[in-house]
Image 1 (tube, rainbow, N blue to C red):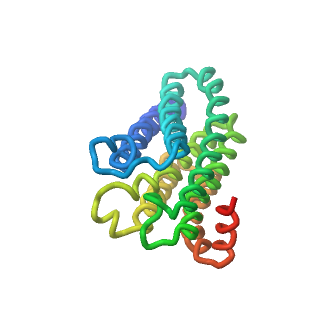
Image 2 (cartoon, rainbow, N blue to C red):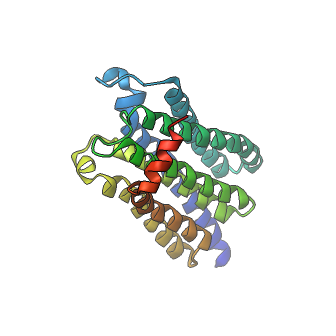
Image 3 (cartoon, rainbow, N blue to C red):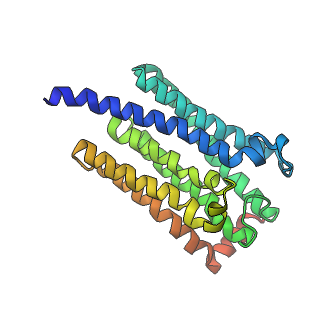
Length: 243
């Protein structure tokens, strides 16, 4: 009986990760179409700098890499998946550095299109910087557990959820605009909870690494908002943007 269940579980996980691999770029496109990918069709402000273009390209490559790696695993091309992982490590490093630089540059010019109009740019800087910190922690853990497939792929799934809020926040729907952080942080938080519960139910076992990563992701959202409102953070943000 156990021998029959194992292929079924693997087939289910492959289908699930394909759903994520398809849904991830669709949400990113829905969020950034008007201001970046398809901005020529909309009355959108010009992209402020080459740095933003560079970060946009690197993030697009990251989305593409996730799709490719999902395909390689589902087609059992494990060796190629592992070799491409080295490129993923280099790309992840560039994503972090470009993300930090882009966030600081946006805060310097007063937030631009990145920060909500009712939030001071120096306070809002905590949001994208924490995105990069949490991504680095989750991806670093995924690299550490690269030889433990169950942990590795679940941590990589969480890196996808970590990058959803910026896209969700830009989706032109009234409930997103009205809900603010409750919606664009809430969507990945709810998904993380659902994924952990479904994974536990499906495998009849709680993956503690998956749970720890989900807790880190979820806890980081209110934490960054709380930190952003402190005088200590504003002073730190002033220092970061002074160079």
